[in-house]
Length: 84
Image (cartoon, rainbow, N blue to C red; front, side, top):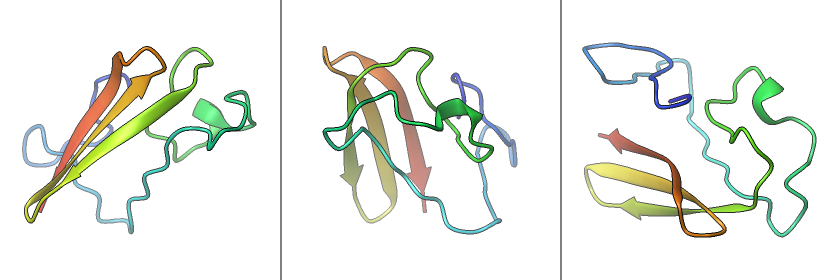
């Protein structure tokens, strides 16, 4: 997803990547949120429009992964669900 819009559409609203492994990275690991890269990286699916600290919560079960990204005030800034 990028800005709430699927990057690719296969079988309706489902994002389907057959190009390899999906990596999820989040936050700044205590560093500055102004590190190089961000939305200019070609493979970046989502990054915030403003420079903020953030964290993620990942719920994993046998059929799906639900990932939610929050800002430092606990506001939801992005969410996706991967289904098996």
